[in-house]
Image (cartoon, rainbow, N blue to C red; front, side, top):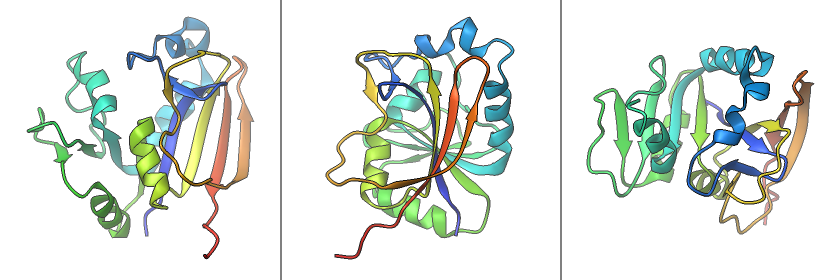
Length: 183
């Protein structure tokens, strides 16, 4: 069974983007120029065979003309409002998101990259579908924005597996999602 990994940049206060779905604070020169964490992230993409994202995450690139953000991965956009994919390689899933993710996890292949965002991640966490969390915690406090995860009704317990501290202050925290206690 393939693992679903939520691999995401976050601020110290738990936001993955500004309230308007932009992420300019994460793109500061001090955080990305010659940064080992960017190199490590790009290298990590080779460990995935598929990428999943919600519509809002996909539209960030789409506004810049990027219709296929992960050309080496099977890419899935989950949306109830998009009518068609702007790129034939990008598969649009408009119904039964949970069932679709379960089917993808059951297939043979490499791990699955959950690219975002907070609401979609919340749905997948609530269904027990996320196996690992990789947080690139940036030395920023945004004060408001798109939360790391939204709409959880139950605590998700994590076990810290590794940490890496980068020279620019970014921390990479890798967690396993612990199984839910049996009711």
